[in-house]
Amino acid sequence: MANKYYVVWEGHQPGIYASWPACQAQVNGYADAKYKSYPSQAEAERAYREGWKKNWGQGKASSGKSASTASAKFASSKAAAPKSKPAGEIDYDSVSVDVGTRGNPGPVEYKGVDTRTGDVIFSCGPIPNGTNNLGEFLAIVHALAHLKKEGSTKTVYSDSRTALKWVKQKEVMTTLPRNESTAEIWTLVDRALMWLKSNSYPNKVLKWETEEWGEIKADYGRK
Image (cartoon, rainbow, N blue to C red; front, side, top):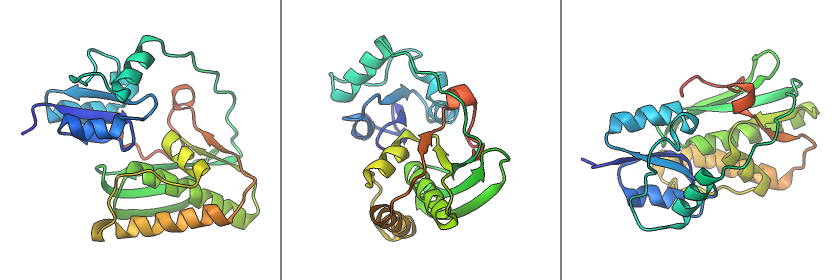
């Protein structure tokens, strides 16, 4: 049984880890990583569900090790967090996407909805085994492909900074292995990457500002 459980809200692959090396692999080299240790698995699971905004920065950070790239960034962001810019107004003539997971890795599903009405435009899953970030990435690309097919220039909203970065860079950075259990999601990811590299689109792909606007319309309610 682990002596501590480490929650990674913002890192290469968010989740709950039972050892510091496993946690450290997710936060090292990740700008503004957000993570914290807990003495029990139940407390870690509760904190992960509640999200970093309610838990991160409350009490001592989770390192317990000598200084590392990630912990240095953690301390820096905690000491002097920059003031965020106003989010502006929501473009309701848009598609909002989100992912629903049960475990990370675990079963993944995603959907795209009309931001104004919440009506479901498309959905996919459950995919047997994947990660939250890969699901978010697939949802964005699915929305772009759907809108291109319709000849629509609507904006696409996602609340995942990681997935937005992957779409922009046209590559994914994940530790999820390629094996029989992950074959389905990797097939979809490879297809999405191929689409991004062979298509252009006029649509804006923007961050949904949850802190100011509330949960994204496509939210599954599994926080």
